Length: 172
Image (cartoon, rainbow, N blue to C red):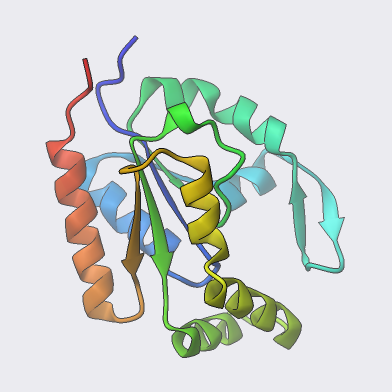
């Protein structure tokens, strides 16, 4: 059955603006915003806490099982910092947000991240880890990298994704 609305993945290093962008685009388009971090917590889709990385260890199979029906219906805007475990068939568009390293550092410090966690995330951004993960996982033309360092860039990204979602048509 063809979906009547698109599925979009918004990914990127923590602190690049995924949730802010997703909330605004969902409000403008009616797409369902699915924050995977919140879903993992609320539905216990994890295997416990990782002291070294200071985060929950998600159970990727459980996450995919929990999302399968929603993704088949379409109209989902998925927000998560990883992307390589989601089935490629789920997404019509994959957006990777990137931010200037100094901006990212400041955003993560404001969240109360430890210095080690801030350094690891900024290093991932410098090395384009999420960009490469997305390009390795999804088809050419599906992945788009957008800058998200300034308020202006963030507003442009909201407008760009909103227009894309409104103009999307199912493939035959």
